[in-house]
Image 1: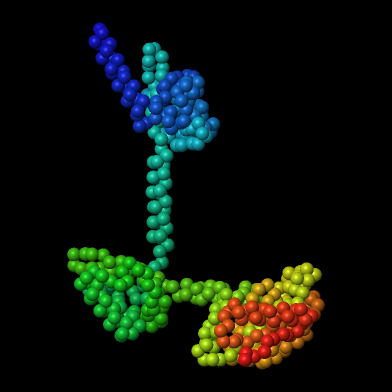
Image 2: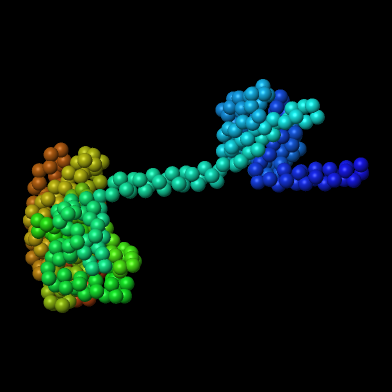
Length: 429
């Protein structure tokens, strides 16, 4: 008897170890009161409660309120003897208030004449994450597959077309039946020189597996069946097959993108309000003109003007009126200067003009003409507008900063002299 009791004790300890260290959460509770009788280590660690805390809790304490009816319905068939076990999904709530999804396997047992319910619970967090990742990948792949509008072309080891999708037909104008087995580059490259360069690189690629454009995105020009020039972007991938290296190309029509890029570039160099050049572009042009003057020993001048009392215009008549003044002045100057001159908005109400091949005296005469025209402008709803002008010429050794500082000082001399006038420096000695 002692030996049997010892063996049973060992078996009981083994079962207890298995339950405590199970990868699943295990709960044993009273199916009537739902009070916990035993909760294994895995469940306690996931929930964040001690066994002492759980001994005073019920199954409903770890289930959100919205899920309680589902749990009660799951237990009822077991109590009524309608089912021996019941599977369902629900949510458990940790001590810190966080939730995690679970799959519950309920089973009813009899122990010493009483009914005991055991719940084997699997934490679905990782599974749900994997499922969600898989769904996202499938959705992404489906979206790419459905919306892909790029031409996909495969060339065999001889450089002949082996695959040609509908997007390629649309882009290049050749139907699949008239392009398969043909030398694509002979048809789409612009000239014989380009074709010879391609043939040389293709031979090198087939013999070595090395290609300058493999794995890269390159932009180039091609022609379609009608002879129209296309801007395209090409991505090449090499695939090794027993007969040789195949090339897969994804070709995109970037004609619209090129136009958009040009428009974006214009936005980066122009002032959005007045539509004239901005400060950054003007600085670049000024640097270029300094370098040109060094090489050609030519002269150029700068004019800077500031609208007098501009803040009072905004304060009295509103910012719309102020914007109208800025646009009107920009238009007036733009219509007067030459095409080789550069007009830009330097700051809030400041404008600068770069005048290549122009002496200071000639620039000062232009500034005076602009000052007079501006003072005579008729701007509805705004009183007479004037501006103060500074004029300087380039001297050997001047930098961008020096020139801007010189013309700025001249402009402020005009301000100090009573506004609505022109101040300039003499020619360099």
